[in-house]
Image (cartoon, rainbow over all chains, first blue to last red; front, side, top):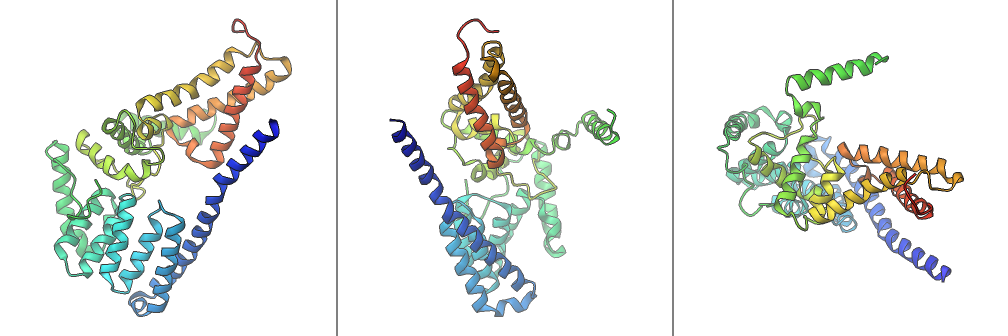
Length: 178
Length: 178
């Protein structure tokens, strides 16, 4: 009886551990893809021409996403590779999938960048305002982006303090997380 | 207060308490705590599901801001918390009040039961029991403002201590508490 119990416990442990191997493999793939992407964007605007390398980043990130189904990082990376390649429609698809896993300020901000690249400035502004409301990352943004946001943030904060803000700045329609 | 560094830290905390700077005093833990409370308010019976705190954090933090009329951001980070930084809140937020309270009560009752049974455990096990109680107490206190059960390196020894504690309780002689 004891040996049956030990065998069952061993099987349960193995069953619990097996998925971890694919997660670790995905983490290693994501690390390598992130490092490659960092090296590419260090080149500045020239990175947009590195389509083969950016495709490699996106492909690796997509593979990593399969091993990390509840993690938005590989999807953000894949979206960012497409964004640098100036393919905003594909970037938006990845960012929306990332948003479906859970909202984070960096996803909102990247949604804004993708909308802006697609020429949808009004929607882009809404996404960026949401990002800086979620996280105080405004100081990391370029000055010309900060200026109009500061007034909107201050107005929202004032209304929040007097309990007159009914809802936070929303995500663009179609991207709502809640 | 022999150590100047500790004395300085305590004085600094006292100054923040006097000034009513609770966000800074609590190292911005009010941010994830209020989000967890909002999750409990939204789904008190069954919670949002085990392991969902990170995914649900941002929308619930934003709702908590509206409820309290107060900005809840951590200016030092990207204002994202994957854990509630309080196990006693994360459990009901993810699993609902009944299951959360049951888990919290079970975790609290074990060290209490062990302390009460110290006089009844066989003499060779008494020292070990004291060590188990010390580990569980340290974990219980850490769980007030942190997430030791979400960190594998801490969760494993804590859960081993819990298991050993149950075993020791089972071996204590029946009778009046010692």
